[in-house]
Amino acid sequence: MAQGRRHTIGVYSGKDAGYSIVKHAQDKNYKLMFEHIPTGHKVSFPAIIQSFSDSHDAQSSEKLFASNSNPQITQAATNRRISLTFKVLSASVDEARHNEQSVNLLLQMLYPTLTPLNIANFDPYIRISGFNMLNDGTADPGAECIIQNIMYTLDLEEGIIAPESGEIHMSCIVITIDAIALLPEDLEQGRNSPYPERYPRYR
Picture 1 (spheres, rainbow, N blue to C red):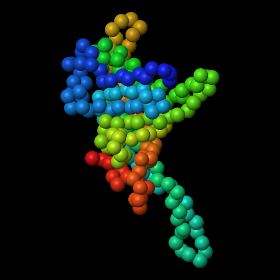
Picture 2 (picture 1 turned 90 degrees about the horizontal axis):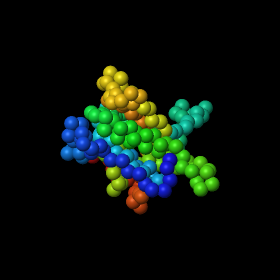
Picture 3 (picture 1 turned 135 degrees about the vertical axis):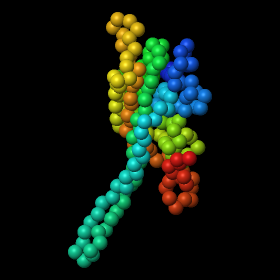
């Protein structure tokens, strides 16, 4: 991950934007955004959501006793796991080049930063926003996550863009993300629950 100046790559707005899905994304503000918390790097895509799942997994253990037919169950924590698939579409060479830079920055967010002594610093927190189903109930949109996996798939059936010899771009890239959503820290005091009143906030 590059150090120093923060990099922000927005949704494509170049000369061919009028022929692309991005015009609709800009008009309706349908954007999927990723912010790398440690560095402030940001990248955005049109929110062409293919699938979304939100799993809440209660971690628990149980013990059996001869004197009791019911197990003793102890709950340790509840994890929220998010899986999200979206498309990155390109309608021109210019847009394809822009999108590949955007995807590259997103992939870089999974790798560690380097200290001045070239020591790897793993600080994987990424805020994903722009899709209300992600919201965690706080004032900030989206959810702060640890992304565990990014799967990058080329959809060859959608065709390719080949402007010059040796340069090939995909018209459609499919990206699937698996992440663990972190529990917000700015919780109001005095609640009976450790969660915000509307966690997760789907609307």
